[in-house]
Image (cartoon, rainbow, N blue to C red; front, side):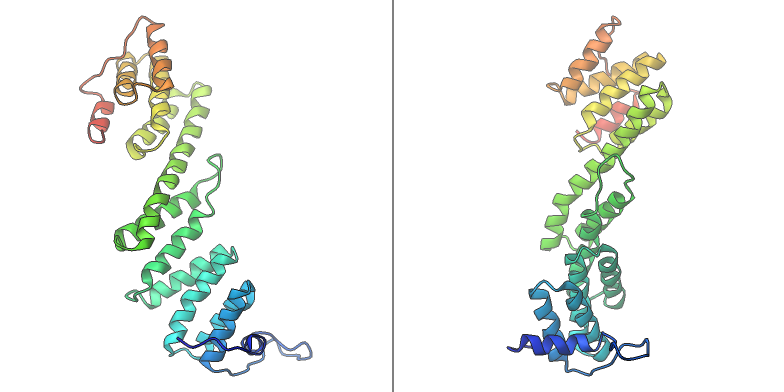
Length: 273
């Protein structure tokens, strides 16, 4: 690795000179000042260490521009993605990391590039009341890191973040389901609560989803499915307040939780619990 020079200011100036157009110049093209790979890379590293992120990612890009066949050009591509991430320029970081993956799919640092893509999406996860396209992208990226690089530190961290991403997606389904339930659109509500049961069984939203299914099925007069939902809820989450609510709802109509062997709920949970 090129050594960082002692003259930070001078090296830093060299890296930036190739990126900035001179104020007095009429051309729209930036001035080109040639520098060695050591000068350019170390200048970018100095800027990064000082927190001058825009200077840093421009400097890393200049390494590739002037020395495209250098091994340090490859490293600079990845460092540019990392610097964009630190600057919260997530779209640029994603593009830079994806470009690294396309150009160097077998590189030893490809795992980190995949991780940068995933973490950029992950840090943009919004609250469950908003569109969850970013959350879905984060989940896909995190799962790809785990699948492709299972024995890396990136995979270990990704596994922890997968749970939160899945919980957000389940929370979105619950929000929409409650909306339909409150308006008496029971079939639409059931489809959302079923999605939570079928796709996000390990999230914190499952007990409520089962209770809401009990409510919706009972409102439709589908008594057997309502009883089955309550029975599955009671079996898997016996101490849950949602089970007490479902039990009270059923007994108020002289019914009891009762599992049905043919119910899709029984089949769904037998594969999970």
